[in-house]
Image (cartoon, rainbow, N blue to C red):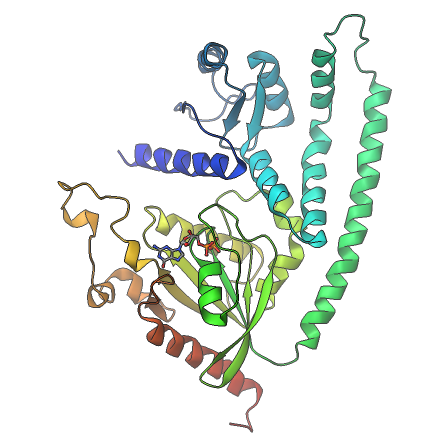
Amino acid sequence: DQDEEKLTEYMDELEFLAYTAGATVDRRFTQKMSQPDSKTFVGSGKALEIKEYVKENEIGTVIFDDELSPSQLKNLEREMEVKILDRTNLILDIFAQRAQTSYARTQVELAQYQYLLPRLTRMWTHLERQKGGIGMRGPGETEIETDRRIIRDRITLLKDKLKTIDKQMATQRNNRGKVVRAALVGYTNVGKSTLMNALSKSEVFAENKLFATLDTTVRKVVIGNLPFLLTDTVGFIRKLPTQLVESFKSTLDEVREADLLIHVVDISHESFEDHIASVNEILQEIDAHRKPMIMIFNKIDDFSYEKKDEDDLTPSTRKNISLDEWKKTWMAKSKYPTVFISALTKENFPEMKKMIYDEVMKIHISRFPYND
Ligand code: GDP
């Protein structure tokens, strides 16, 4: 069943996100509904089932694979008496843990406050519970209002701060002159940083977790005497919180202002087609979808990774595909120049480099028509 498969993939991804944030997942619950319950997201029977499980097994947190409305969050927390996280909150948390520069930290803090503002009452419920509620007056509207005002002021401050940095970054980008700029784009964890390292011989942090890259890194790369700038950007992900898309404006500006997009795909991942679609959607959102693009299908060395089962030798396992066979697949028939590589073993790097060189050269020539 296709729906069933999709669901498993989504839950796998959520579990990976949870793991990246530092949690271990104890159990999954799923439910088929035509639309989420407006009060508790899942149906009331399912909510009860989860509640009982949480109690019995002393679970600390329940995570939902979607953004919950402020009231859903509040109701669920009251109902289940456990910490509730939604997908947005989880992603924000990972970003917060990984923000390294003051710019990234400011961006994440802004996104967090924007997420928090409509959910403010929730904090008070926590407080009430902590203090046991005995002799505690419920939070007065005025107290929440004061809090809201403090947060709104903070949001204004952070936005101003970002505006200043945005301007500086725009100036920096202008100062890079007419050198061709290429940006690595792709779903999170596909190997962008690894490829960046391989191409620029620099050391960019790469690890098998989601969003290892938060800040934009720009490196000078030279292929066949042709220098250009290569940017590694934040990994895209399905349902990237809108608060983040907005506050990561400058990071995305790198993509928006690039001359060439290098779209990296992890071909060993079962959902790589979905990943391509998600990335294209975000590119469209930021109006960067008409740029010249190269498709790089990465991790060809790791292709049989998901299905190591001996009995599993049907064509669908796609084991040990040779380079020639790759070139006959639909992926190779894209309207963009396409190449299959392994960033890890550097398999097929010469062909990839030639492809990048050709595309960069095209742009370079259009810019300096009288030189060669
Ligand atoms: P990013 O999030 O797109 O920047 O991805 P990273 O460069 O951090 O890589 C994510 C994980 O995939 C790391 O564990 C890498 O070692 C691994 N990886 C990257 N490229 C390849 C490849 O070609 N083959 C295999 N097997 N693993 C790779």
